[in-house]
Image (cartoon, rainbow, N blue to C red; front, side):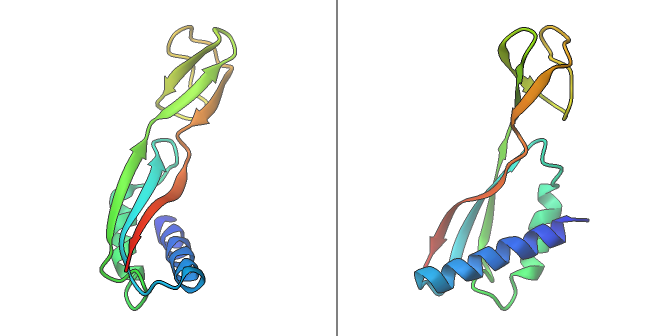
Length: 113
Protein backbone atom coordinates (compact mmCIF):
# COMPACT_ATOMS: atom_id res chain seq x y z
CA UNK A 1 0.00 0.00 0.00
CA UNK A 2 2.09 2.89 -1.30
CA UNK A 3 -0.76 5.31 -0.56
CA UNK A 4 0.63 5.76 2.98
CA UNK A 5 4.00 6.96 1.63
CA UNK A 6 2.26 9.19 -0.91
CA UNK A 7 0.08 10.68 1.81
CA UNK A 8 3.10 11.36 4.02
CA UNK A 9 4.69 13.24 1.12
CA UNK A 10 1.51 15.26 0.57
CA UNK A 11 1.33 16.24 4.26
CA UNK A 12 5.04 17.16 4.18
CA UNK A 13 4.35 19.47 1.23
CA UNK A 14 1.40 21.04 3.08
CA UNK A 15 3.52 21.61 6.19
CA UNK A 16 6.31 23.16 4.14
CA UNK A 17 3.87 25.46 2.34
CA UNK A 18 2.35 26.49 5.69
CA UNK A 19 5.81 27.52 6.91
CA UNK A 20 6.67 29.24 3.64
CA UNK A 21 3.37 31.09 3.16
CA UNK A 22 2.51 31.65 6.82
CA UNK A 23 -0.88 29.98 7.13
CA UNK A 24 -1.88 28.00 10.19
CA UNK A 25 -4.45 25.51 8.99
CA UNK A 26 -5.49 23.71 5.80
CA UNK A 27 -9.26 23.44 5.36
CA UNK A 28 -9.48 21.78 1.92
CA UNK A 29 -6.94 19.97 -0.25
CA UNK A 30 -7.92 19.48 -3.90
CA UNK A 31 -5.88 16.62 -5.21
CA UNK A 32 -5.79 15.51 -8.84
CA UNK A 33 -5.19 11.80 -9.36
CA UNK A 34 -4.88 10.36 -12.84
CA UNK A 35 -6.81 7.23 -13.73
CA UNK A 36 -3.54 5.52 -14.69
CA UNK A 37 -1.57 6.64 -11.61
CA UNK A 38 -2.09 3.35 -9.75
CA UNK A 39 -3.39 5.20 -6.72
CA UNK A 40 -6.52 4.06 -4.92
CA UNK A 41 -8.47 7.19 -3.87
CA UNK A 42 -10.28 5.45 -0.99
CA UNK A 43 -6.98 4.20 0.46
CA UNK A 44 -5.42 7.64 0.04
CA UNK A 45 -8.35 9.26 1.89
CA UNK A 46 -8.04 6.74 4.72
CA UNK A 47 -4.30 7.37 5.00
CA UNK A 48 -4.75 11.13 4.82
CA UNK A 49 -6.99 11.17 7.90
CA UNK A 50 -4.40 9.18 9.86
CA UNK A 51 -1.26 10.99 8.66
CA UNK A 52 -2.71 14.50 8.98
CA UNK A 53 -3.31 14.17 12.74
CA UNK A 54 -1.29 16.73 14.66
CA UNK A 55 -0.33 18.66 11.50
CA UNK A 56 -1.63 21.80 9.75
CA UNK A 57 -3.85 19.47 7.71
CA UNK A 58 -5.66 17.81 10.62
CA UNK A 59 -9.40 17.82 9.91
CA UNK A 60 -8.94 19.07 6.33
CA UNK A 61 -11.31 17.86 3.65
CA UNK A 62 -9.66 15.91 0.86
CA UNK A 63 -11.33 16.65 -2.48
CA UNK A 64 -10.11 14.15 -5.06
CA UNK A 65 -10.50 14.94 -8.75
CA UNK A 66 -9.94 12.04 -11.15
CA UNK A 67 -8.15 12.84 -14.42
CA UNK A 68 -8.86 10.48 -17.33
CA UNK A 69 -6.14 8.61 -19.16
CA UNK A 70 -5.23 9.92 -22.61
CA UNK A 71 -2.62 9.19 -25.18
CA UNK A 72 -1.36 10.19 -28.60
CA UNK A 73 -1.49 7.40 -31.16
CA UNK A 74 1.52 7.61 -33.45
CA UNK A 75 -0.14 5.28 -35.97
CA UNK A 76 -3.42 7.13 -36.53
CA UNK A 77 -2.32 10.57 -35.31
CA UNK A 78 -5.12 11.10 -32.80
CA UNK A 79 -5.58 11.83 -29.15
CA UNK A 80 -7.32 8.78 -27.74
CA UNK A 81 -8.70 7.74 -24.34
CA UNK A 82 -6.61 5.17 -22.45
CA UNK A 83 -7.87 2.78 -19.80
CA UNK A 84 -4.49 1.15 -19.14
CA UNK A 85 -0.80 1.98 -19.44
CA UNK A 86 0.76 0.67 -22.65
CA UNK A 87 -2.70 -0.15 -23.97
CA UNK A 88 -3.53 -0.34 -27.66
CA UNK A 89 -5.16 2.52 -29.52
CA UNK A 90 -8.94 2.09 -29.25
CA UNK A 91 -9.37 3.45 -32.79
CA UNK A 92 -6.77 1.61 -34.90
CA UNK A 93 -5.45 -1.06 -32.52
CA UNK A 94 -1.89 0.22 -32.90
CA UNK A 95 0.53 -0.25 -30.00
CA UNK A 96 2.50 2.95 -30.49
CA UNK A 97 0.48 5.10 -28.08
CA UNK A 98 2.29 7.69 -26.00
CA UNK A 99 0.52 8.45 -22.73
CA UNK A 100 -0.12 12.19 -22.40
CA UNK A 101 -2.43 12.30 -19.37
CA UNK A 102 -3.61 10.09 -16.57
CA UNK A 103 -0.55 9.49 -14.40
CA UNK A 104 -0.84 12.75 -12.45
CA UNK A 105 -0.78 13.03 -8.69
CA UNK A 106 -0.69 16.68 -7.75
CA UNK A 107 -2.02 19.17 -5.26
CA UNK A 108 -4.20 21.37 -7.39
CA UNK A 109 -5.53 23.83 -4.83
CA UNK A 110 -5.62 24.56 -1.11
CA UNK A 111 -8.08 26.43 1.08
CA UNK A 112 -6.33 27.68 4.19
CA UNK A 113 -6.85 29.85 7.26
